[in-house]
Length: 303
Image (cartoon, rainbow, N blue to C red; front, side, top):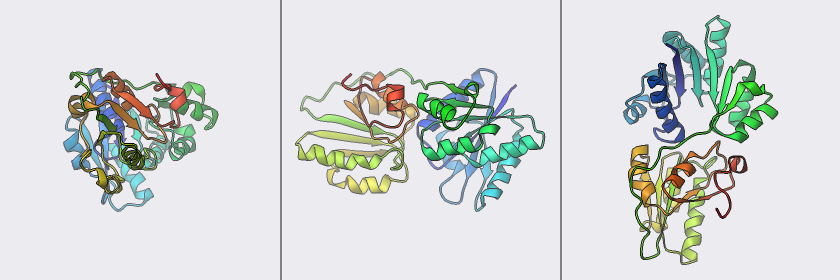
């Protein structure tokens, strides 16, 4: 049985990557693989226990990196690899795991290093290029990501695969539009500014108010910009609901069927799975022209 070891950030229990890992974990289990998830632990933000409570079906082990510098974190990851004895290691945004696998390979351990490249942010792409010769395969949900890794990072084209994400069909009936003309807006994603540009929701609400457009806004997610976003939206507490992080089941059950429009403010998306999920519920997407927008063509102007 092939054993897969995913190293996972635990600072946020819910998000697109977290949902992908849940589905991949279940898929691999049902197809004769043995997935193991290494949950990293830090002093403040990374909490494996919180993540495990949100994802109880994962076969998970802890990787204790509390108070360690980079060398200490790499050694902790090496120890985990030695204990789990995987055939394949997939670092999910855990950059130190790349170095850990290189060291294990140099010691003669027979394992493969696979990347799941979930975004088009420059630091992530640079990390992949730095360890280009160590990766046995890179899986890209986005077409632009694959193009950049081949043309800019110098990966051989046969080592970089484009496998787009999918989304489950809707299972709850769509709620009819409100008779009073109120537009039901939604945002679903990580509450961060650097890549998701979530603070753009503040001037959006201001502009709608100035134009006299009646609206409601449901914000689903959590992240480092949560407090700043809440402060900025305080003027519309009667129309804006910050629902926090919700599991995919709740989003499909309670959120997407009750929206008219999904707003995506991202600066960068590898694929934009939330756009697919929205459209499968009959929700109209309004999206920024993020890095990857034209390559994926999930949203086309006026269509």
